[in-house]
Structures are given as structure tokens and as C-alpha cells.
Amino acid sequence: MKFENYMTIEFPSKSSNEAFARAAVAGFAAQMDPTLEELGDIRTAVSEAVTNCIVHAYPDCIGTITLRCKILKNKTLDITIKDKGVGIEDVDLARRPMYTTGGTDRSGMGFTIMESFMTSIVVKSSKGNGTVVRMRRKLQGCK
Amino acid sequence: MQLTSFLQDGKLTVALTGEIDHHCAKAYIQAIEGKIEAYTPHTCVLDFSEVTFMDSSGIAVVINALRSITRIGGRLILSALNEQPKKVFKSSGMDKIVDIQEEIYEV
Ligand SMILES: Nc1ncnc2c1ncn2[C@@H]1O[C@H](COP(=O)(O)OP(=O)(O)O)[C@@H](O)[C@H]1O
Ligand SMILES: [Mg+2]
Image (cartoon, rainbow over all chains, first blue to last red; front, top):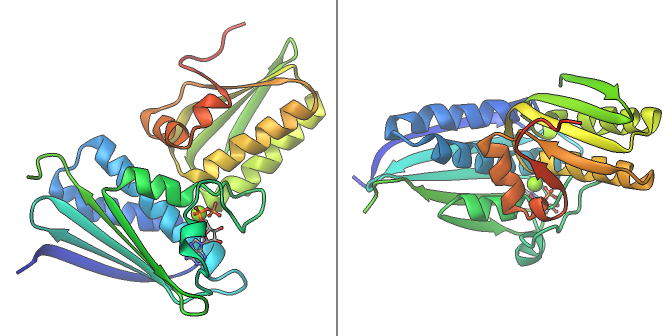
């Protein structure tokens, strides 16, 4: 058995689900005894990835977002956020600090924050085929 | 979104509350811009003491406030940040562009 526990939720890309998604992950991660700072980091990264699905993946429609969390051995939380939206043509460019295709209410710092708040992040995407963001966070006390 | 503000000696203090994310960012951006344009303060203090969470949408709120206040030659101060918002500002280098003060700014 490679995991200790997991959960999957699916919800429509409505902005009211941003708060729900980070609260759901925080509730699930609570069993790992995270510090307050670790929980804050995880909530922030989830909020960024889910907001990107809502704003960028489905700009003119409501689509489905799938959020999956796994607790791995060695106090590691694995989070996958997936959409079937417009996709990203150039992922390296999209990940650059301050790069945004959004308006003035976007800062272009979402990926930068996910990178600095999580232990690792992998982004898989291509134009027209949606996006998968997979992040891991090792918690205090891992080996 | 819930926001209270007061003006004293040309200094506008705007207190933000709760969690700042994309869901409420636009409303904050418009409300703060409207107040800066209406009162033309020399200083605008964004009081973060009641903000319990923010993501990069909060950065956009501050950048837009900075743009509005700079346009009229004023100065922006962020005050009383909790740990999580402070970490988001620092990780994005915002602490180098705006003044961050520990306590509520006193005259
Ligand atoms: N799930 C997604 N689907 C399509 N495009 C995305 C997605 N996530 C991110 N992007 C693209 O990457 C850019 C950078 O994202 P991010 O760093 O979060 O900044 P912001 O959301 O403020 O624009 C976005 O402006 C968008 O063009
Ligand atoms: Mg983003």
C-alpha cells in the first residue's frame, strides 16, 4: 500500500468553491497533524490552483474541477487538481513570476506561490486538453 | 467582502476582513479605488489585522491600491499583517514595493 488515505471531490468552476476547496483540503490534512504554518501554505497553494481552473481553464463557461488528495507514507501530502478546460500552450512561460493572461485583478504570482509554498509541483497541460497540477508537501517530522 | 474605512487629517484607513481570494478581490479593488478617488488622501493605510487568509488575489488588490494612490501622489502602507498574508507578500517580493508596518499606523 503506497498511500495511507485519500479523498476525491468534484465540483463546478464557481468562484464560491475556492473557499470550499481549501477548507476541504485543510480538513482532510488535519489528520497529519500539520503545524499552523504548514496548513496555511497548503490552503494557499490549493486556492491558487483551483482559482486558475475557475478563471483561466473555463473562462466563459462552468466546467468540472477534480481535486484529489493522498496522504503518502513519510508525512507527505499529494494534491492533484485537474480541469478539462482550455489548457496552457507554454507551461514554462505561464510559470514565470508576474506572467498573466488575466486582467488587472490578477497578479501573475499564482504559480510562483505554489512553487515556494509546496515541496514540489508538476504541471501537465497542452492547448485544448485541460491542465493537471500535481503538488506535494512534506510535513515537519518526515524523514 | 466587508470593508470599513475612516478618514483623519487626510489619512485614509481601510480595514479589510476575512479571507481575500478571487471570489471577492474585484469588489475590494473597486471599493478601495473608489474611496481613494473620493477622498484623495496623502496616505492610505490598508489595515490587514482582520484578514485571516489571502492568496495572490490579495496581491492584485494591493497593486491596484498602489496604482490609485500613486496617481494622486500619495503613499500606501500595509499594517498589522497576520503570518499567512505576510508570507504571501514576502514570497512575491511585495514587501520591497510597499511599506509594511507591524502595528496600526499612528499619526
Ligand atoms: N488551469 C489553467 N488553465 C489554463 N491556463 C492556466 C491555468 N492555470 C494557469 N494558467 C495560465 O497561466 C498563467 C499564470 O497563472 P498564475 O501564475 O496563477 O497567475 P494569474 O492566475 O494571476 O494569471 C495564467 O494567466 C494563465 O494564462
Ligand atoms: Mg492564478
